[in-house]
Length: 489
Image (cartoon, rainbow, N blue to C red; front, side, top):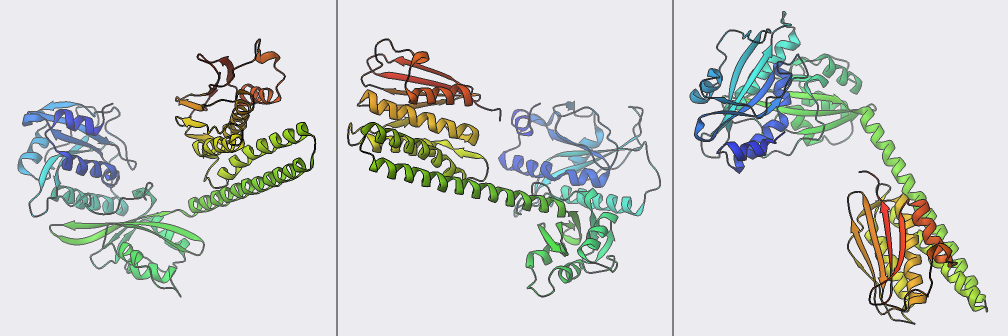
């Protein structure tokens, strides 16, 4: 399905500022749909204003939908939808007409012109919102429904006047409270004129024992949350409905999220809506995850310290040995343990069980270069990027890379040594090549007795389910290719 941006660019004369305004509107118009108990369709004028194209659609969560199929991308000629034409031509909300029975279900149609606020001007009209209400379950409305409908009417008027969405305000949270989570209606002075049952329950859990209706919400909320501490100014602004902002309040072990929507109609503030959501359990789970994450990182830190201790003991033992073969074997073990320690050190600083493997690879490469400096003075280099890898891949890959680089340094005596990385969406291809002595005559990986190559083969084919090949390089030297499958994102 084409996006709003695609449809606007392809079929309309709206500019970038207009598109930004429409994106802001569409990101927050679930509020209008829920308060209206109605479907919303945003129509934009076609090039030359010969008709209309539907560029966005929203269904209500508070009532039955009218449109079970998507209409985005539909085009209607001018004159086919008279209410849309009237709202656009006369720059006003249109509510005329009897319910439409053409689909077998009574539907009340209304249209709202969409205006973008322009500093120092009257604004610019961008399109029309068609509001369609399914009347099949119509009945005598309750106090809650009447409050919703009145609030929807005020919000629609703000859209027509260019006062909604709120320009220049901070972006709303990813999961803001919705109408059904809890709603308070405030008057101009910040007093509660209506409290939905869910909103009242949230304040009861914060410790309120009196009735909310008639109370000044900012003062009541501050008394519940700040008995001996300085009052949070953001809380007072949000709870009084003076600015379009969000905040959270906590009292008695309960955390409640507040979002204020000032109602400004006809140039004056007539009150506000405050949406409320109890996020106590959500915040508790977040704290548990943070604690778990900190514990895991601490474990990685301790494993790294223990591995470094083991490496230090092996290094100490190697210095006391007078047998060259034994000393060399212990030094190889030190490097192997060190490569694992590097991975755990990186994981101890990572927020999740994923690491930036480029950093690990560079440290492994530098470690191999330091060992070879006295003999060959070769510094390996990396070409390409590994990217972020899960720890289950990072640890065996770091060990395999260590073995390959060390093997090339000791036996190949190269002048150049490179690690070339090519990363696709489902595989990681790594090539380690050098221009050294090359493979011994008759070399066969399956029958090789080299401990380092046996370790690499076990890691790549056994733990990483990858493929390993070692071939003579054209022009001299050796080329080792690893192909490792990556887990699905």
